[in-house]
Image (tube, helix red, strand yellow):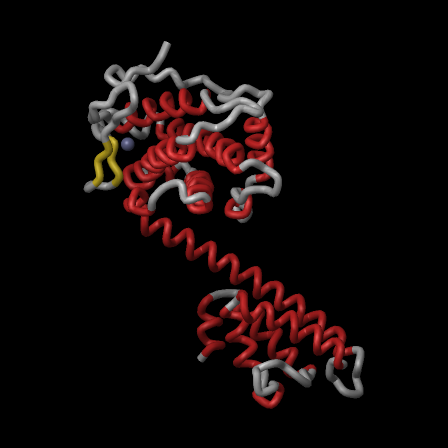
Length: 313
Ligand SMILES: [Zn+2]
C-alpha cells in the first residue's frame, strides 16, 4: 500500500521506526536523540570525528523527520481542510506538490500536503543505504529537497497556527525543533536561504539569540578568571597586586576573551586605567581596586543589554 497524492491516503500514522535497527545510521540517530538540549543544538549537529559525513547527515535527517512528524501531529485538528485549503507560508507564498511519481504539480490542502510529505519522506528515508553500502551521488541533493519541504511545515505552523500553538504551550517545542532543523541545514548548507525566506525574521532572531548566548558564556568565563585573580591578589595584602606570574596568566586569558567577545573587550577597555596598559594595549600592574571594578563591570554586563550600554558610554 502506498500513499497517493490525488486521494491523499496518508499511511504514515502509527509508523514508529523508520530505519532497520542494525544500521550505523540508526545507532547515531539514537545517540543524537539522547543528547539533544536547547543550548547544545548547534554543537550537536557538528560532524563528530571519525564519522562519515553522509552517514551523519542521514542520521540527522532522520531526527528532523521524526520532529516534523511530531509537529504535523501537533497540528492535527488545528490545521484542517477548511481553514487551510492550500499549503501556504503566510499570505504570499503557496506551495504545490510534485514528486517523481507525480511530476505534474498539484495544489493540496495544508493537512494533505503535510501527510503526503511524511509518506514521501518515509519512502525516501527507508531506502537509505545499509551499513557498508555506498551512498548514491545524488544523496545530498535528495536530502536537501526533503529538508526544503520540511521547512514548509515549520513555516506553515509558525505563520498560520501560532496562536493555538502558544495556547497549548507548545511554542518551546516548536522552537527547539526548528532550531535543530536550522542548525543542520546551516552547518551542511543543505537548504538555500531564499527557500527559507518566509521565516527570515524568525531565523534572524534565533541567530541573534545564539550570538548573545555565546557572548554570555565569554562574559561568564571572564567573571570566573577575574574572581580567581582577586582571590590571588587578596593573599598579597602588602602590595594588593598580583605577582608577575599571576598577572601574566590573567593578561593572557583576558586577551583571548577580549578577542572573542566585544562585551568583554569593551568592559576591560572602560574599567582598566590607561596607565595600567603597555603601548600595545596589554595589561600590567593590575591592583585589587581595578580587579574589583572589572568584576563589577563584567557582572553588570552579564545581567542585560542595558547595563552593557551604560558601561560602554
Ligand atoms: Zn494549516
